[in-house]
Image (cartoon, helix red, strand yellow):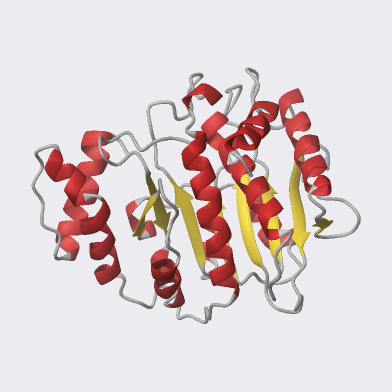
Length: 321
């Protein structure tokens, strides 16, 4: 899918009044996503509707799930997920319309490919406060009430539309959760990103459960979170489409498509968080972050876990990631 198509999806989703649960923008986004899934030729995950409602009144809350059926549907599927609500009445271009548009792009690409495993395109409701990490959070309700079988791996996208706000690191994409299964290290080494994108695998302990991967981590299942981190427009009225980098989003869509193909053939059998990822982390940090810091006058040598800890602290305190 082209940058123009990604932008078109974002513009259809973003409004000044946001997509807060129960709002007109929220209801519009739900219908638009379901319509796009139908147009891509996906099938509903359960029953005859992409829209899976939940909640006491069974009206405002709904996850949206489409399936690309593989040749061996008995295998555990790969789940690709992103939330579609906003934090209050905010535009929510980066948070999280960008991720929605990327998933739709990936869905279009994957629909024309053959693989054994099915792929679920899952758009979670009510990720933002006051539902965050509460029983009403859409990903929690999906995991506990709506899924029909365990997933092979969950790949969640959140805050993936912007440049990393550090000189020389604008094209970075952080890949969180590498420690969740030993098989993921081989996957991430194999999945070379396209031109215009560099990846930095890291552990969830550095960022915490900041999105819908929480419920999968809590239940000791393989997961990855793709994110560009926080920036100045996070949860702000300035989170508008003109701030997004659609070229980077196109590269992320290409990377995720390739990642799914590799994950489909991968062996992920645990143990959960039972592998040492430090060598891989050091390799990617020295390759994709340390040179940019040296260019700005910050000299670092990354050899130990303590060095990694100090680098993460520097990025968070000085650059607000």
